Image (cartoon, rainbow, N blue to C red; front, top):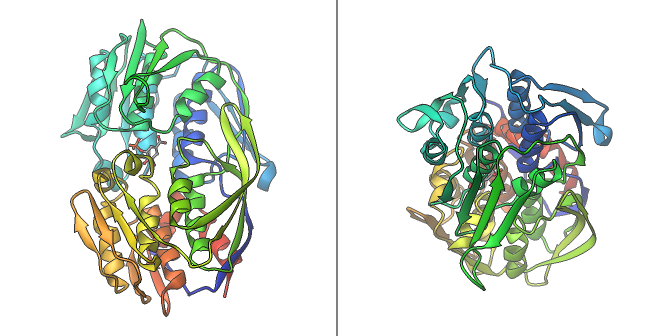
Amino acid sequence: MPTQIVRPARSLQGSLVVPGDKSISHRYAMLAGLAEGTTRLSNFSTGADPHSTLGCMQALGATVTHGGEGPARVIEITGTAGAFQQPSAPLDCGNSGSTMRMLSGLIAPHPHTFTLIGDHSLTLRPMERIRKPLSQMGAKMEMVDGHAPITIHGGPLQAIDFDTPIPSAQVKTAVLFAGLQAQGVTSLSEAVRTRDHSEHALRAFGATLTRESAGGPGTIATRLSIAGGQRLKAIDATVPGDLSSAAFFLCAALLFPDSNLVLDSIGMNPTRTALLDVLTLLGAKFRVLTVEEHHGEMIGTLQVNVAPGGLKGADISGALSAQLIDELPVLAAIAPYTREGIRIRDAKELRVKESDRIALVVKNLKAMGAEVTEFEDGMTVPGGQQLHGAAIDSGTDHRIAMAFSIAALRASGETEIHGAEAAAISFPEFFEYLDKLCQR
Ligand code: S3P
């Protein structure tokens, strides 16, 4: 397994365009595969996960072509006009929970037998959460003890009224994608508003869906409704840069008083920007230099530096933990360098991501000499700590590999990131960009 050495840095300087958003890339690829016509996507994610989705769409009968280089790179997807074909082999979702969960909802209404498989990590992740709503709609699904491989005997589905028990944009999306093709009007309520890329993407492809607040004035609960039998039409779109990938560079910049980082073409969808709120609380100074809207998604240019005196501390719990779930590993990794530390609770979902992210963050922080207290649903990382370089175990988890590369920038000595190649799941260019921006 390749090892990457990360040396300490003095600051981060420069501007950066991160790869297209992973969540949006998955959704555009899936809806393009179902739609009629040819969808053209610029800045599609370079990560391995969305490419697993593209592979599945091809197996289902869509045509995918790649053209151009660098920023001019365009992916064209000619859809199946609402009729997926029987795949000749299992649909390989690789490491991607998003692919497996959202695709299940998209394909369940089609009259074929589908098998969805994935790598070892994906086989450990809970899938019961999609079986529940989809089988209520009439889908016949087989799993192994709530896990992949999944077999779906597809066919006509009925609309349901579903309350999501855990905040999950993937489960919400599976239900909306199935509801789009079911009989009747499917409704779904969520107590915590999760990322809403599926809602924007469905509208972009021509579907109608409604959103109302479900818990009365002042609450964040939402109820979505989508009528079945709607047809989708191809689009031309640019995928905004992935803020969850940019999070590593934002956190890195904040470790040094002299940093100055500009993110170009970055996604700033309000259901994803809880990170900016927390970083502001910690002491980040942001300037939004430009902002515009594409297909309901906000894209802009963002400049960041840190207030004099460095980072303070933060307490992350409740709905905020769900909205920050992908950024918690890197926040925990920089927590020792804050003044007051970071406390994370209500984040049990971290234990069932690509790895047990609570256990691995705690283990790696300790390896670097940090004091940290582990809880079932989070951790407390005291501030004012100096770390030393160490051997880091990525657990083949992309966000762990990248989070500890950032912690390494302020540690003394060199850090070895074992399993560094995992970064390619969402951000293949990560180490190259880190090297370019770090001043040493
Ligand atoms: C995602 C939703 C989140 C997130 C994952 C991507 C999505 O998962 O952790 O990286 O694209 O909808 P859950 O919906 O399971 O919380």
